[in-house]
Structure formats: structure tokens, C-alpha cells
Image (tube, rainbow over all chains, first blue to last red; front, side, top):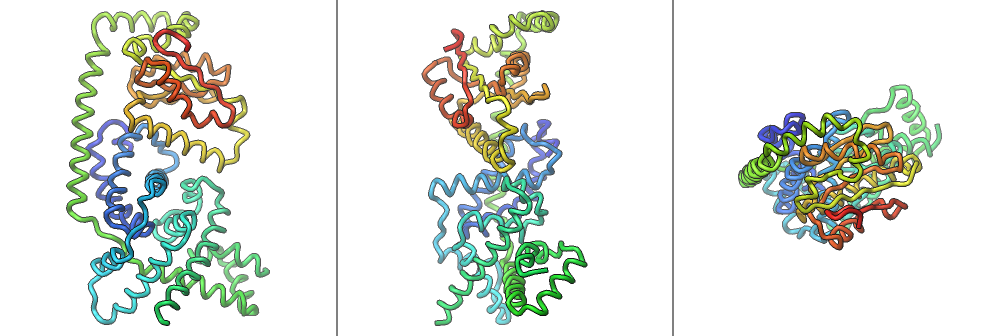
Length: 176
Length: 238
């Protein structure tokens, strides 16, 4: 990123190779919508170019890029373009993982949990996704969310409790 | 350890970031408290299930779109660079820059009235944002982060609307940062001098129309917390 900031924007390709898949997964977990997620990844890299002058080495690159990514997601959600069709979500899960028989149950659980995640309010969804999948420390997540570390930990716990409730509800609905 | 402390430690427990002694205390408490034991098991289970959500793979068309975006950006940058160089280095301006450097130390007052002269000559306006003294210190970290985000939104909107040329920011310790073309360096003396009156930002936009500049100024997020914005178009303060 230092090179990109210095004007060698060609080095953005290296960042794309390292982060595009992570960002795509991040947005997919937040929205369940592949087309929207791909658009948002694109938007993140565009903003990196536009705002490269504001990057500060001190805080590290990962918190910076996830701060941008989260802003992109919030901006898009504000425009009311963040609700995926659920059929699309199932299609995505099927295509992501082929279906040998012993994986069916695992797929079903993942599918239900993903739906449950989408039932959570945005501020609970993002803290869970950041803390569970993105390999970020709690202090880095606090920087991204603009809150205290202890607030992050409390939010994780509360969000997880709510996620479990949503999951159980969906599982109950399915089995009934 | 009590049940309330279990809640507080859960986030660390899940990521195995809890010290061993604390972990032992927690597990000891859970062994004697069925309610906490159930709660911990439930949280661990849902945490584990989350790990089953598969990562997504980048499709080739995404890479193509990225390549297109980067190529477009580089082409735009090359055009901008050529334009900037033509503007920046005519012989007369080179001489003016040399004179400027020689006189910079004794011409602060003059700079105040002429700051951004050649930027303004191309139809630009300066927005001088004066945040109240101590404003930043009075905010909590969360409020500061929110304000930063609102500024980011503002910059982003102005860039998308092709209105923003850039900005100069002066910090209370006298340091400064610049976002935009190199010419903005010329505004640093103006920003530094006015910093005694709480000026924090000098924002440069692509218009000499006072009404349009005022419209942009109304979007400044710090207005909501008592900041003042002064607009200087080509003809001086509006």
C-alpha cells in the first residue's frame, strides 16, 4: 500500500490478489448477494485509489481496508440495495461447495446460519463477521467500528446470542 | 467469578484469547453453574457453526472489471498529470515560485490575502473551516470516529460530483496533511497562520460561483457541532 500511496498504482494489483477474495467473502457474509458483493469489492479498490493519500502506515493496512469496505457496505445499504433474494443465497451455497452426500448436513447448517446472520441488525452482523472471519484483533475491530475494545467484545457476545436465536427459529421453522 | 463476568469474557473465550488462569476460573464456574454451562456451550456451538460458512471465490469477470477500472484510473491520471504540468510550470510561474520561496518568511500577511492565487485564477473557491477550540478533545473516541466518517462521506460525495480539488488540514501541533494536487502546498502558510483562530481545514473546490460554494459548505459535517465555514471565491470573501 505504501507503493500505491507513493503513486505506483500498478501495485494495486498485488493488493487485489491478496484481498479480493477476503473482501468478497466479507460482503457475501454481510449481504448474501454475489452481484452486490462483487460491485462492492470493486468500489473498495476504487476508493483505495481515490483515498490512497489518506492511508497511514501506523494503524496497519487491514483495519484501513476494512474501514473502507464497511463504509461501502453502509453507503450501499443506505441506498436500499442490500437485500438479496434468498433463492440467490441458496444457489451461491450450492455452487460454492459440491454436494457429496456426507456434506449435505453441513451445507444445510451453513445455509441456515447464513440466513440467520442476514436476520441480524447491521451493527451486529458486521461485528460478528469481522471477529469470526477476518483475522482481526479486537483492538483493530474497535478501530474499524470506531468504538472501545470492550464495546466490541460486548457486541460480539450479544450478537452471537441473537444469531443463535435466529438460527434456532429458522431451524424450528424448517423442521416443523 | 460470577455469571456476569462470564458474559464479559465470552468474546475472548471464543477466540482463545483469554489468559489460561482466567479460562480455568471460567470453566470452574461453569462446572458448578448449569445456566452458564449451557450458555457457554450454546455460544461455542454457534461460533463453530459460523466457521462452516464457506469463503467465496473470485470469478474471472471480477478480475476483468478490476483491470478495466485500474486502466481507466491510470489513463485519467496520465491526462490529469499532463494538464497539471502544463498549468504548473510555465516559465513565468516558475519565476513566481522562486520569488515566493524567497519571500515566504516575510510575506505571511500578503499570503493571507493572496493564498491560493493561481488556484483561484482557474475558477476555484476555498472553504476555510474553523472548528471550535477544544472541539476535538471534547469528543469521545466514538464521536471522533463518527465525525471522521462524516468527513470521509463529504470528501467522497464531493469527489464523486467532481467538485473537490483537495484539502489541507492543520493539526493543533502545527503539523499538516494535504490531499490533492501538489499546488495545495501553497495553502499551508494560510492554514498555519489562521490555525491560531481554530482553523482546521482549507478545502478547495472547482467553482468560483459563491452560491455553489455556499451549497458545498452547507454539507460540512462540522457545522452541526458549531464550526464556522468561510468561503473565499475568486473575488475574495463571499
